[in-house]
Length: 594
Image (cartoon, rainbow, N blue to C red; front, side, top):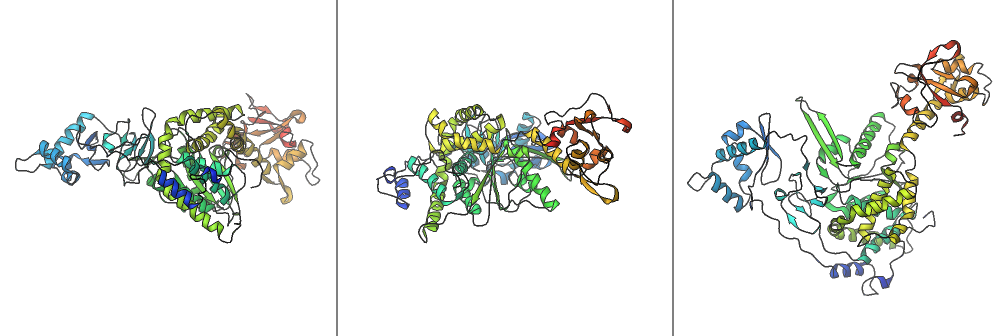
């Protein structure tokens, strides 16, 4: 630890805190599992009870869309259904209830059923539902979702689990969306985790890694807990962990994967934006990506920027919705919802719009164990705990989700009272609400809110740059650092020339800095109160930004986000250099007063 401030709930678990007083280590884990109250999930409700095993959705351009007993979205042409081609394969082997339904509806009179009649039945029912647009439909696959009543629902591939532990098949859902089937994942378990074991897990995570700040372990666990709820939170925060070799950053990512279990899937160490949105289409689950290194290669840098843009879209509301055109001239829509966790050795400098969504944690070298093999044994043990607790961890967060909105609102109000803006408050509150739901039962109170002040301050300070203001300053800094080639191949930066022209310093080898600046669309204002920058896509100043995100005149809108920068209503005259449409910047930005 580099600072001495105690984080929230930062007390060590004493022997007296653990069941049976003297039990510790692995015995504590065994005891907790032995004493856990197992709540068995009820069997899934059959789809045939009260309805057909096929859910007709509608038709579009000669194709018919429906969900068969497998739960997957299927598209059949009218020609196929009219002759029953492929219909029997959808219904065979789906259980005696489905077989009985087919014999009742489409019987041939000899103990069999007719797939052609079944196909015509599908056409009729789909026509009754009208036109169906799969790109606009609310399709939901694996993950945790918010239903139309505001409750969390865990989609586990072949069934859905409610916060009370009840299980139902996907087609019996009535949550205001289309639940589509996928490969089954392990459902959450509602076996209880004792308060002592939950706090013990946090303490072990604190001591096994070299956290830069004493609150970072709490923030990390809070992120994992919140990410466990997939797309249920209205705002989802992302996590970035960086550290040198030997800091255990990859092991920490593996620990998150152990806790999240099959909900997160495999850790990805080489990804693209296209690969992520295609592999996680219509899913609401966490993303875990290792080796997310910054790269000077323009191609790889662009790939990383595309993924960061995807993370931005994943943060709020319905998540990232992307539409792409196909080779057949039809569009294809993708949606991905959830929180992302990325790690790298080299530190990434995020754009302001990313820093308000991504919480950054740094790791120091792993603390040396006091015993020769103590560190390895403890690390192995904490992984064992997390793997065993995975389904219970997800079950606990699902069962506690009913108080998510109230907890998040209380923490957000506290953050705003400390000076956070809405985005900073949302990002910090999502992580800290996850921590509170995991560690405690019951509604959050003032005492628990006060315990969260230290990590709240840390996250607010880290995301403190205002998006718009910082964007403008970045554009201005780029202008100041741009190098101009003068007479006799002399090179000077715009910042140096402005300082000389405004009388802030002298440059011995530049006689007329004002003229040099004017050739690039930068002029000195009257009384030297500031300087002006021409705007327009083809202006000389726009050429300075040609290879940046402020190209084609976008530098104007960026500069106008800075306090004191103005855009005069009409063109200004600058001596013999004529009239130009410009934005004016106060001289104090050149001198550094602001």
